[in-house]
Amino acid sequence: HLFFHPIALPPPPSLSPPAPASSPAPVSPPPALSACPAPKSTLPANVVLVRRYLFDAAHSVRALGAFAEACEAADAPESAAFYAFVMPTLTMLLVVEVGTDTENRAAVRPLEPLAALCHVTEEYLPLSELNSMFDAGNGHGACYRWSASSFVRARAQPREHAPQGNACGLALRDDMTRMFARHIALAPSPTSTIEITRLGGAFARVPPSHSAFACRGAAY
Image 1 (tube, rainbow, N blue to C red):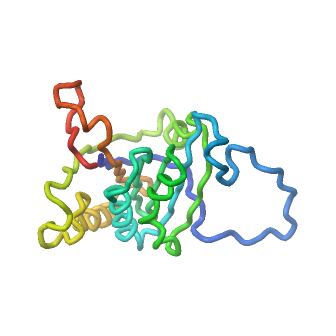
Image 2: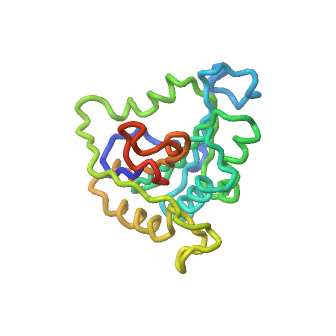
Image 3: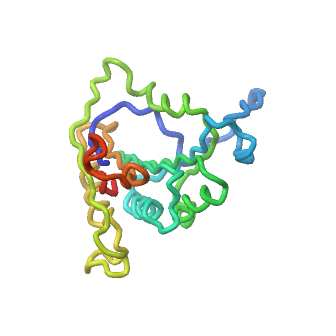
């Protein structure tokens, strides 16, 4: 699902580590749910693993290419939700996982080669925190709006038989990711975003007449 709209996002973390303070204050240990990932079996059912990948705008096209590879990999688990937020100054990839350790590793494998180009964080969050993640930047009176919504069709043929110009055979093609990078650079607000969400899964495996939900076959 693609969205283009100006919103007020919370300020992203710096892409470079901050300089150490001359007299650091004592730091209390973080809460258990926000600490480094623990074994999945020890977590309550309402907790998810959230991974964030922050790329400078100069690497947006490469980031979105890896995002498409992760979303459309043969072993991409349905237990992972994939989101991309393309902004004028940076691109954030967000992967929310509820699967097994094996599924979670498979979900982010295509992103690993770009680790040197981005700032990566991961933490376990309760669903209540995940669902309110952007509330602070999207409060009442912020004048944000959804200005467009489109669907990207799934591949109509196997990737090895992809047409010329789309060698990888991805539904989210290279020309699309380059177009996103060009247009977000012209956005009217520094807090504008193009948001991309992977679709598919269980709701795509039922007939169109099952319920009132359009474009079940779309990839994004």
